[in-house]
Length: 337
Ligand SMILES: O=C(O)CCC(=O)C(=O)O
Image (cartoon, rainbow, N blue to C red):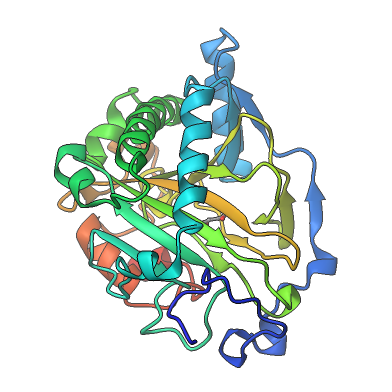
């Protein structure tokens, strides 16, 4: 039986043609470097000035970092991963009740990235949820597993606080007032993608997610501890990010690159798949308010530095992002002065 998702329980012995990337656009797994020194920042080390300095350095050189002792209780994280796994283990008929390929839906199970637009698919299914305000969106989330809404709501509340704390530290690392970035971004939305990558018969021919940057402000990624798959681009080389116990991976999104006037970068990253084990990740995205006018605070350009990006609203940016393929040029390039 053909289904619309790949987490259908069917074991493929070869990769279906529609997932095969052209030779020039394959992951070349043998060239990937293991990354031992991804910055790991201890948020409860007690020295706030050091935390801010480490965050600033990581944002400038890598565009991503990991945080430990971040204040999100272990139990909340474990339950989140548990219920996400239970969801993807449901019978395919049950999951398909939530299927949609319409990116404007606020709750949907989907596959690949943008199936209606793309020419080659990605070896990923995902459940995408809007998460803020919770009272508005949680009632439309899956009711099976029965604990899903309660567990995911708790996780979302914790992640939002962590995200704000990080945005404040990022602002301070730029020499700005700690509320300054949050003020530019307005009342931020929050989305979640629970990614599920089934074992793939020919992982060297395809991606779970091809190289992309995130269109939002900040991404807080919970990786499967047992199965690696996240890779980030640094100095032209793909680095494999080894999952760390009790850590979150933090990616700066395109909006923080814009707000920092290009000083900090929204990093290219991708997810690769493997033939042995399914992998899961939970990406939480803080997103500027639709009407937020994204521009660098004056303090960052008053020394005469050129203003790199045009002003735009987040709604304009987001529409542009979803109208393209994921792995085209950096979407911010389209908004340069
Ligand atoms: O699965 C991963 O590690 C990466 C996920 C990701 O990049 C995304 O959801 O945008």
